[in-house]
Amino acid sequence: MTSELSYTAVFEQAEEGGYVVTFPAIPGLATQGETLEEARSMAEDCLRAYLESLTKDGEPLPFEAPELPRTEKVRVALAAA
Image 1 (cartoon, rainbow, N blue to C red):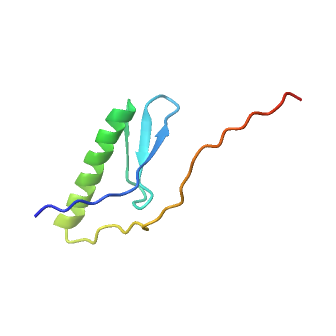
Image 2: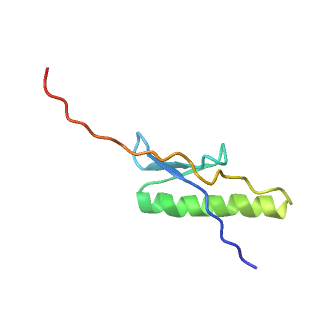
């Protein structure tokens, strides 16, 4: 039987290029990719492997709060001083 789970992933641009991906509900779990597409794929693989490992070892799956705060960038224009 297959079940589908979802966890929030945070994609941050790395200084050296590419993206670093972390999971707020799973401290210490991270991956990266050179492009956003690659980072998404790596995040899926990383998360799947981690959750499968927990399941295999009989450990509980991490809990994620149903509603995490929403973040957005807000742009403003400032007049020159």
